[in-house]
Length: 300
Ligand code: SF4
Ligand code: SF4
Image 1 (cartoon, rainbow, N blue to C red):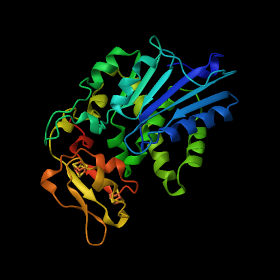
Image 2 (cartoon, protein in one colour):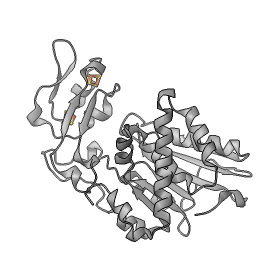
Image 3 (cartoon, helix red, strand yellow):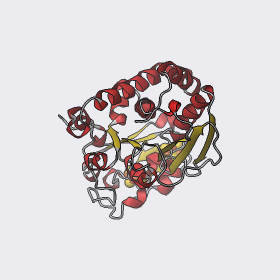
Image 4 (cartoon, rainbow, N blue to C red):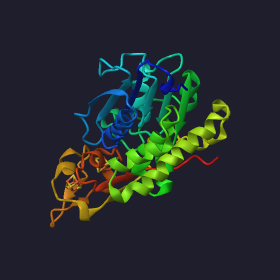
């Protein structure tokens, strides 16, 4: 991996994911640390679909003088993917000879991938394995950041785990990363984000001293790739957070949700639910969670 401090060349970092994962937070942290180190920085982002589940990406370019805010195809020195399929979609942006691809192995299957709405039906989703992709790129790191963050106590810190992993591809000091992260996360979550950053960084440093293709540690952290095609899931409603806006009721493709007499969401027809997660992504108040075993690690 390259040391950007020793080159006048512009360094390009592309961060991709889906709405609600924290792509913009990662991008802002990186842009800020670049500015602190005296670089000229340009950042551009698209998050019009940032309502949970929509595609989100951000380009960060830094160097002595940066002219364009967008990274040309094939010139990303680092491609950081917070969601697996989003990473694959943007792989053509990775610089082919020395680019670094870092990705969460988490799958977020969009509603349009559910062509067959029956329970347990196969989804139209990437079938490539992390091992296959890591073997194809010059530098590849695939980790189950979501499970690692869950083990720390907050699955939403997975973006900070990936930020920690990405930090090993750049040469800014650890203390500066932690200082900037603390400015961008809610005060109550500073400590867990600190732990998440260090965990992601430690993971990358351990993997880099091993042969990646033979790394047991890498394999331990790979999500079960077929987990999304079984029907083992639980729909969890947090009624205290529901404000009765009716969005989930209207948008559920199976019409299994309803508002009860208190105008709060209830799962009225559980047998119809396919676990498609449309309701989870669209609820503005995070009142619905679809818990799937895809967030559990494969036993080593
Ligand atoms: S309740 Fe939610 S997960 Fe179940 S079918 Fe409806 S939108 Fe999909
Ligand atoms: S979208 Fe969320 S807040 Fe709105 S009714 Fe459904 S659960 Fe309640």
